[in-house]
Image (tube, rainbow, N blue to C red; front, side, top):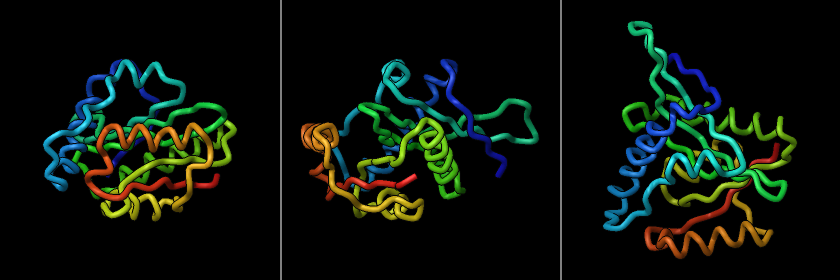
Length: 171
């Protein structure tokens, strides 16, 4: 599959939101969730400290690349946190998520970070087991900010669907 990863642009805002909705549908279906948090609005995602990278599928039959996934890394207090990874389900299981994670780790290292954290579902195959295969290991939230993320997840009701963990990749 011919995919390239690049920094996002304002032209990608609507499609990243649509990709997150489509990817979240897999979790909603798996959990039978009646109430699921909405995606982060693209303008909000773009205005937070950090970076967003998108994956484009380049079809040789057409001249226009199609954005099929994205990764959002927050930067705060000198820390990098992988906030969201989403790939269109129709492009799943083709290595696009792995390419996005690898690119996010490289960019984080380039920006001077020594580790990247994330929070995810422990028992969902495309969550914790996937991230483990990308070099992340289960870790404890040691800073007040990372501990606050646990509180945010609790307020959103995410723990109702299964155990969640923090994971860290050393760069």
